[in-house]
Length: 514
Ligand code: B12
Ligand code: SF4
Image (cartoon, rainbow, N blue to C red):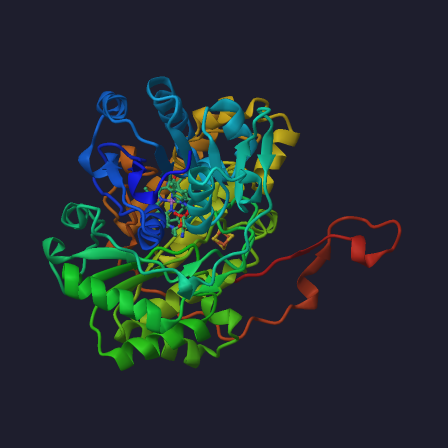
């Protein structure tokens, strides 16, 4: 029977990725889906498990005592075990409730998710329109097979995966309405960073998304917008949202929580110009890549000019991942960056007084004690203590397929139930034992901690609770402007190539600068 929108009882659920966590993050994706539903005339309730620290017993009781027509939730795939429990708990107490799950926990594994839970609909990729159309189809008793971007079980219990939905024009999406959330509580628990201009208690930050997706495809990475083109919001729309947050929530820090905020320096300069023109004064941090300046082929002078402009508009810090100091691992990662570019970017940003935050991934199959050392050496050279993580093969990544093909993952459901944070060794595909790799990483971390005087303890070398680079003040040697030319006398052929095919031979170059 068809019902009107206002007669339907909808519940949106914000799950808790880190119960008891010392910081809390406003869920931008969920809020964006909620805003879309609101714009389309739906009313709903929000169960915010995260900020209220509701335990599982509370959640189960809540579901039991409230009969919802629809429950909608989403999360990162690392929360698979909990989401699976939650979906099945809803169905146990309220079998008629339609359960819709989005984000990577379901969208990156639609088949596995529907096979192992009683969920009704999985939303794949961008969630706003697909989730809305799925609810509408059910409300109007229409066939779900016509809703793009979802997977579901049909009347014969067969899993159907529909066509992907073409990505929305990013500027057409409504500005997120945060009123359903206890924003003050989130601001009080937001991540703060030491800043000489302001005391931590006066930092009021909120997230803003400036882009969806990324222009690259690293072999360990997967984000929800993987199959969509990399899209950036127009500076005008970004600034309208920031202005709103400043006026309504009195915020002075904006976290651009993008996979990739800016792919090149040209793009960042456009936003900087718009910030200057707007007259808005706030501090911001963004996600970039090591090649921010080099991709735009800027001269060193121009790179510094752009970096200084970033600083002038409030850029406080930039996050960009070194990932590994080993060139072969970088290739396996499909990272498409030069290890050397890392130092240069850190140097330029430092010159402009912008803090660099970096992260590394250990545990690619060819990782050895030597490659681990190479990574720490790069961090030492750049004077940064990285956020340390292990390769965590996530569904829909090349490394996940590698893990399956090589027998490291045999039961996907079991594996997904076991994964957590990238700071834990969830799956070791190297030739080292868990203990060996951990010891080696701790050894490198310990040395870095001592030399850079970071102040970490044995327990916090890996789980360092956020980035630590802002406290370090190492003087950096200016990078060489032009790469030294190869000296032919230093090139040695190290493998005898009997076919005399030079393209197949391996050479070793002893570069004193590396
Ligand atoms: C903020 C953030 C966090 C926060 C989470 C805060 C929160 N409540 O969302 C914290 C710091 C806790 C976190 C932790 C981790 N994160 Co994180 N994080 C992000 C970040 C930077 C922003 C998320 C965001 O707001 N995106 C923007 C919105 C618009 O996109 P979205 O969330 O995907 O939402 C869309 C869809 O997913 C869908 N959707 C989302 N929710 C819902 C709900 C419903 C009902 C529906 C229908 C649809 C739907 O519709 C939305 C709009 O289209 C992303 C990078 C990024 N830009 O996505 C990484 C990212 C999500 N994180 C990632 C990873 C790997 C992690 C960690 C595993 C890393 C680690 N340290 O170990 C941990 C996991 C911790 C755990 N215990 O499980 C990966 C996800 C990988 C994957 N395949 O799932 C990402 C994509 C970064 C990356 N490129 O590697 N993260
Ligand atoms: S790791 Fe970074 S650069 Fe690579 S695909 Fe993911 S978001 Fe893009």
